[in-house]
Length: 230
Ligand SMILES: C[S@@+](CC[C@H](N)C(=O)[O-])C[C@H]1O[C@@H](n2cnc3c(N)ncnc32)[C@H](O)[C@@H]1O
Image (cartoon, rainbow, N blue to C red; front, top):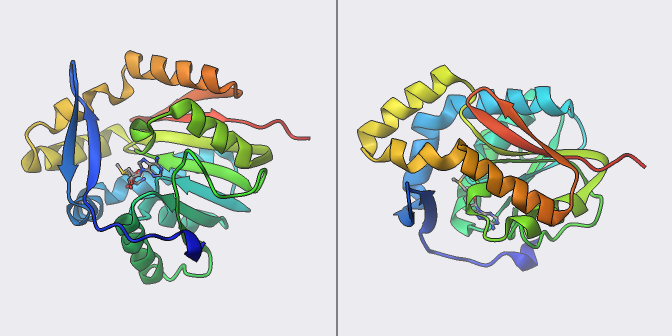
């Protein structure tokens, strides 16, 4: 994995879908991590619980696609016996994730992988579960990414790729805190779970030709792609 690691000292571009147009909002990686720690923290634990309930997979290897600072991976590892691979295309995010993994004392079970979800440098049928939170909205060719994800899961494996806040109450608290930081927060996030967005996922998943369902959970959703057991 080390050979693939390249240093990128750039800010991460986070794209938020606005009402009628797409606008790129630049957010410093350090700032994003501060928000993850100070505002989103409880949502990771709740989303990890929803993943565990929906998939029933609690051991083996799990890939977190677009893992960011690693908070979902850490929450899921703490709730299960899974070993986690934290894939992200931002080296700065990976540096933060590496620090968080060490701080959580999970260095033996979690590792980072600097890569693009559209070209996952893992063998076919090599992971039991793929999870992802808040990243799928940024994937440039979702059909290609879904095919890649399908390729790497084992027969009998499944995914939970989506977004969410764990509960309506948590989302309300997060919205309130985020509004203090950014008055446009609700506008930025509104489109994420609407019908049009789901239609786009259905179109990309249909194009990818993978078997799937989109599972709604409280204050979120997960795209569950399954590979039939052989
Ligand atoms: C909004 S952040 C979410 C991070 C984390 N999952 C969380 O919930 O805190 C989106 C992450 O997806 C990553 N990402 C976006 N497109 C990606 C791609 N094509 N391949 C890998 N990572 C990607 C970004 O670098 C970023 O860390």
